[in-house]
Length: 147
Image (cartoon, rainbow, N blue to C red; front, top):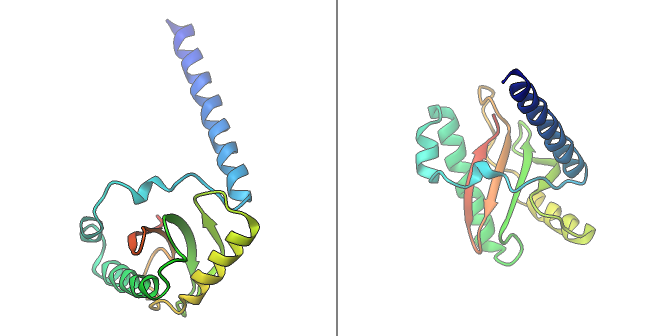
């Protein structure tokens, strides 16, 4: 029985380190798995779990990005990404996308997202200034703060 548990621990350690290595490889190419934190929770439900300051910033940033997407309808479609926002509301590079993109596509989308700047300025008490954003066909589908 002891051998079984030692084997199970060794296998889980190896697979977790392989998974971490896989993430490291993908993130070095600015592509990571599809940000599962963007999937299950309804945006309004997600905002209820935030502090009032975080919730207000997420709501105004979501609204800002929604307006931006409506005025640029064909550029940000069905994509998820992660990027930092500086204290002035400027989108900072690198922007990490959830799918492999050609160099040209990545540059085009990076430029497009940087054109969305300035986003609402995050308050100094806002813990996370890195956000995950999911874009649908013609709208923002979700926005999450990194933790």
